[in-house]
Structure formats: C-alpha cells, structure tokens
Amino acid sequence: MIEQNLSLLLVVIPLLAAPVTAMLPAGRLPWLLTLIVSWTCLVIAGWQLSVVIDGSVISYELGGWAPPWGIEYRIDAMNAFVALILSGIAAITLPYALRTVEKDIPRHQTSLFYAVFLLCLVGLLGIAQTGDVFNLFVFLEISSLSSYVLIAMGEQRRALTSAFQYLIMGTIGATFLLIGIGLVYAETGTLNMVDLNLRLQPILDHRTVHTGFAFIVVGIALKLALFPLHLWLPNAYKYAPSVVSVFLAATATKVAVYIMLRMVFGVFSNDFVRITPTDQMFLLLGIFGVILASVTAIYQTDVKRLLAYSSVAQVSYMVLGMGLASVLGITATLVHVFNHALIKGALFMACGALVYRVGSSQFENLNGLGRQMPWTFSAIFIAGLSLIGIPGTAGFISKWYFMLAALEQQSWLIALVILLGSLLAVVYMWKIVEVMFLRPASDNVASVKEAPVSLLIPMWVLVIANIYFGFYTELTVNVADSAARLLGVAAYHE
Amino acid sequence: MIDIIVGHYNYWVVIFLMMAGFYTVIDRGNLIKKIAGLSIFQTSVFLLYISIGYVSDGTTPIIAEGFTRYSNPLPHVLILTAIVVGVSTTALGLALIVRINEAYGTIEEDEIHEQDKSL
Image (cartoon, rainbow over all chains, first blue to last red; front, side, top):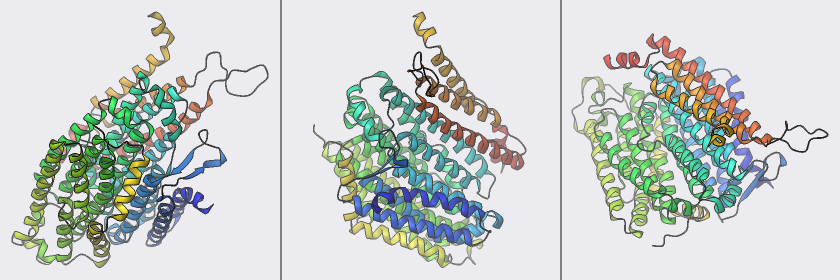
C-alpha cells in the first residue's frame, strides 16, 4: 500500500514545501528545508525504483477516479529511473547551492529562490511520475515557468533577456504540445497514456493524428533544444546563477528527452515511427546536431557557453538513439540521459567554482588557473574524459551502447558521426585544458585560492560517480534496457 | 465546399488567431507586442479545445430535466487549467519586461542587442 502512495508523495512533498520555504526568514533556513526535502525525494525515488525494477507497475489513482477517466500516476522502470536521476541531481546540487547562492542571490531573496527551486523540482518530478498527457503539460509549464524565474535571477542584466527569450521559445513549444494533445484528444477522447496508446493503434493513418503528432514532436523538440531549435539554450545556461546552470543542465533537457520517448514510443508506437519519416528526421537532426553543435563549441571563448553547446551536441546523441528506434538505441539514449547528467553536473559545478573564485568564465580570465585550483581543474579533466568517452568512465558506456545500436543496423554513417562527435569533444575540452593549465598564469589569478570545500565535495561526488558508473553498469544498463522493452520498442529486424 | 467554410467557421477563427499570434511573436521587435502575440496564440488554442467539446444540439453540461444531450465538459475543465498557465506566463513575461526596461531603458529588441554588443 505504501508503495502505491510513494508515487504521489514524490510530487506532493516538494509542492507543499515550496510555499513553506517562501515564508521562512531569509538565510540558511530555506536552504536547510530544501535540502531535507530533496534528500527525502531521493530516498522515495530510490524506493520506488526498487519496487518497479522487476518489471512491475505502480498505479495511483488521483482522487480515487479510476483511469482512464481520472488522472493516473503510472510508474514503470523508465519513470522511476528518470525520477531517480532528477531527485539525485537535486540532492547533490543543494549542498553546492549554499555558498554559491549566498554569493549570487541577494540575501533577502533567498527564501523565494529556494521556493522557486522546489517548484521547478515539482514540475520535473511531476513530468516523470504522471501517466496523463494533459497533466504532463501542466507539470511541464510549472517546471518551465520556474526555470525562467531561476535564470532571470542571474547577476548580469543579460540574464533577463536570456530568460525572456527562453520564455518565448518555451511557451511556443508548450503551446504546440497543447495543440497536439488537443488534436489527439479529439480523435480518441482520452488523455491517459496507456489508453491513448490502445485507441490510437487502429487510427494511426488518420490525418488529425498525424497533425497532432507533428505538433507534439515539434513542441517537445523546442524544450529539448533539439538542433536547430536550440538557440535559447546557450544564453540561458550562461547567464543563469551557477547553481541554476548546474541543475538545469543536468535535468531540464533530460526530462524533455523522457517526454519525447514517452510520447513518441509510448503513446504513439514504434510502428508509427516507422510508417512516418520520424526516425529519419531524428537521425538527420541528430547527425547535424552532433557535428554542428560540437564545432560551434570549439569556437566559444567562455567555459559556460562551451559547455552549453556541448550539451546541445550530447542531446543530439540521445536523439540519434531515438532515431535508431530499436531496443539498443533507446537503451543507449536512457543510459546517456543518466551519464550525461553526471558529466554535465560535474562540469557545470566546476565551472561554477571558477566563477565563484574569479567572477568570470571567460577564457581570458582563466589563464593558468589550473595550478591555482588543482581540485577543480582535475574535476574538469576527469569529467571531460567522461564526456569524450574514454574507457573507464561513464561516458564510455553510453558511447559504447550508441555504437552497438548503430552497428546492429549497419549504419556506418551513424557510427562515424558518434566517433567524430567524440573527436570534436576532445578538441573543445582540450581548449579548456590549454587555457587553464598550459598558458602562463596572468596577474589576476596569482592570488586565487582553491574553491571552498562545500563546492568541491558535491563536484567530486559526481566525478567519482562518473568513474564508478564506468565500471559498475548494472544499475544504468539493466534499468535502461528493461525500460526500453517496456516501452514496447520491438527489436530491430531488417 | 461552402459547408467546409461555414460549417467549421470556429476552426477558421482558431487558425486565423493562431497564425496572427504566432506571426506577431516572431516578427515584432517590441517585447510587449511579443507577449501580446503570445497571448493571442495561446488563446486560439483555448478556442480549439472548446470547439472540440461541442456536441451538436448539446446543452450546457448541467444535469436538468428534459435534457439528454450535453456538451463534453472535459475540454472546458482542461482549458481552465491552460488559462491559468497562460495568465501566469503573460504575468511573468510582463514582469521580465519591467525588469528589462529598468536595466536597459528600452523594450525594443534591436536596441537591447545594440547595447549588449557595445559592451
């Protein structure tokens, strides 16, 4: 019985905590409450995953209305996996938040900042938990609206314009999703994902269904920052406060990947992907995304922007996995969702540590900083190796599965693109290494000290997780594999 | 032909509003006009949902004697939620514009770009 209620608690606890946090006096108290809530969420998410890992499903009927009429929270391996990633990242980000928020956010706004942070977490967790497409839209907007606010809290005034640009793009995306859901509802009369899937199968050739599908895919692609709809992302990540960059880079686009998987393969079906040119479109955009975003990353002169473009490239890998539309492809995508959250979490934390000490993430201010901040620098180095996909790191596992998925279908082009993406990652990560370690130290960094321990510990937890999950793949690969099978993706047959 | 045009007039209104709003968002450089366009764009979707809920000869979905056909109330409920989302988005957008105006002294997109470039 308690297992059933877990699925709802994961959303209700942070939702109730948010207004309480907003009313607490400014200072460390709001932070403490947020920390406790996020750790509680992590425990619940872990528990939830342990229940559904064997392939069973938790179903919770909100308000006692039986599905498909009422809203259903339906937890299978994939939901639980995504919820675990989200609450895990939140739990590890909060110890990091204490010092950086004290520096980035005016003291009297801290209560509100943490309240909005919790609302963002509610939205993201809600997306992961719900089994109702309209409910998903509402949670998507909760998380998006709160992330616009979080980004706008950046120090420079360009944070405001970046947040505004994100608001425009994000709202267009969400409205497209809403139009798509409306059209599909008009055809089927249901909003429950499982029910939708059943009712859509006989009418997959209807034009309204195709139109609805197109709206849904484009809408999610905007949130996903799928190339070429990624233009809002680099500025949003660059001008946001450090802790917000860490949290959003590790969670927001990952959740969008989950929505895309759930809608395309779970609500529509693998057959539908094959009879429409969806898989080719994913592959094409994925190929362009991996190459062009990586090349753009090479030309950046700012660590945060470089990492943001690298995120666009990494999301494109996940889209490639979806385009392959096989169990292995989806497994690779889900494994990369997990591993990329670890990689980008660590990298953005290191970047935030640089900003904390130097006040800038521009290359010109970071010359020779690696010798002053050895721990931060080595974190960037190891997480960078993981990003590239060196054996012994988590990144290698994802690249390995992408490679297997591509070779299974003899797509040499895709395999080549995956390799090329890694080579380009070597180039742009090397640029950071060169600036920070090989260039002589400039005057402004001579007196810079290593980042505070409260920043280093979360950073290194993620770095060590990168190495740990490079050897111990049981959790990631097994869960991803069973999630991909539950999604009803048929094994690839030529 | 005339049936398609007249019989679906509400959908034509939806499409017109949708395109007008979307075009305004993309084309206008004034941030307030962008938000206005975004609002129109969202409102068109509300109309779309309400049209979907229509049942021919159906009445308001309140149980009363003598009526057996009711319009589908679910899209109405859904759109109440979507209106709340839309209002919050507009409010947040306008609040951001106020802050942008304080920081830049303008709400014209090209002038903001100009200021950012000169830095």
